[in-house]
Length: 182
Image 1: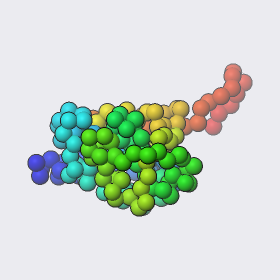
Image 2: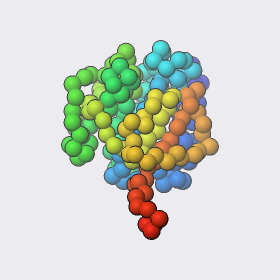
Image 3: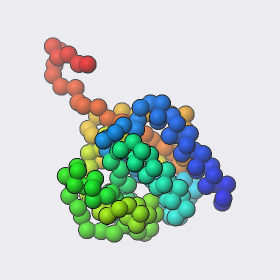
Image 4: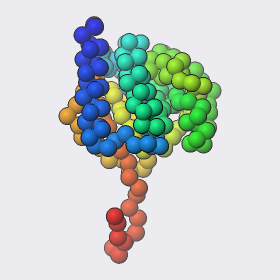
């Protein structure tokens, strides 16, 4: 199992390297991380939550978000309606509404549970409209992205054993035949 977590760390680093090249990590942007730790270790989503995988993933993205001055939110599973764990600072800065729930392995998942324990003054919010998203294990983060999501292609297709999908967003194009766009 130790080799699985070495692979997980290596996959995350390779993914991050690709995303830095794509200018994905931008100051003040909102980043949602959805993750099935079960999927990262080769198990079925929601069946084998892994504290060890959660620890590796949380630390990795927490460090990047702090370094890049991004707002970071961790999506929980459907048992808490995919609510998001974040810091009170992010909640207030983004004018989000707090909900009452404490994520745990059986309702929220290991990553949300760990984020709730580790983040300074952690809160849970029902929704956000994020600029960026990383979905590890097909947790369906789309509901938390801005309306026009753009897939980001990387050389990394899996993190651990979980399929990874990445998106950024752009403003909607409005107007008709005479409209011009940048």
